[in-house]
Length: 297
Image (cartoon, rainbow, N blue to C red; front, side, top):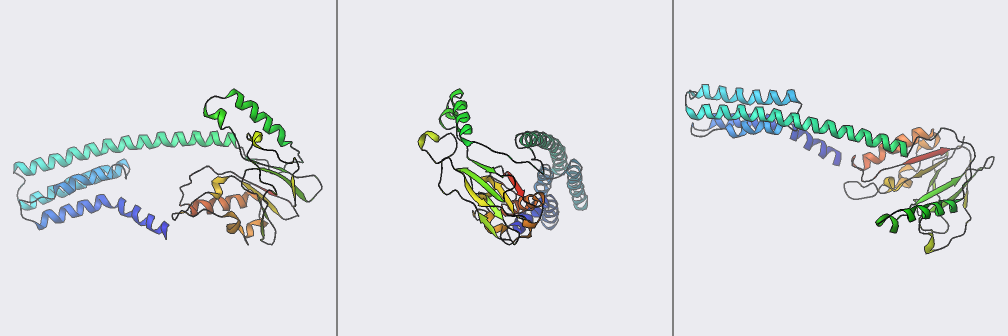
């Protein structure tokens, strides 16, 4: 319903230049000669400038000038100074509208270029993982110490608040299990082949990396069964904190329950989830979202 309202508003806004021309023509035609619809016709190309292409803006200006010219000829007042002044005003404003449109388009092109650069940088920071990765092991304590060393090199707020939430996952070779260490990150989800979704929260809550001096925790990972056909989904809070128009957070556990994506390849699951969360938030994501899906054949 919210998407329908947004689409209606967009269509209405894009139709404003044509509505202004029609309203100006009707007002000018239906009122005495002392009244004029020129203000409506003058406004039309200005409204079109940020909404339309350059061609559309030019056509709007030409239409506004043509309508005013026809009205003045029909009323026999083209020889009057007021009529000439109105025509000159609409022409000048139409030319200015084209210039405004040109500036807006250049600004949008620069923004698109900046966005492409930012996306390229993000892909470099968060590269696409390989489709298949061999066994691996991690000691999270080393990450804690590395982050502590980095904080000593930082200044200001980064030195005081340099912490990172993280989930470390180990997939032992030959064992149908997954071992997890969660340091303040959203709990991963395990999607079974029958559509069941099981969250994998930490058995003992822990603070993010970089805050180890505030407490100690066992250096033992949580362990959960990871059978064939199941998919392990890890994600950032950009997913779980995506809000809809009513301020409701997206719930990945509820959204994925009973879904056939659990039987799909990770890429298909990730793609479907990305589409769904963007639909939930109306396309306005407040934070970046990173997803990793690992499926055991």
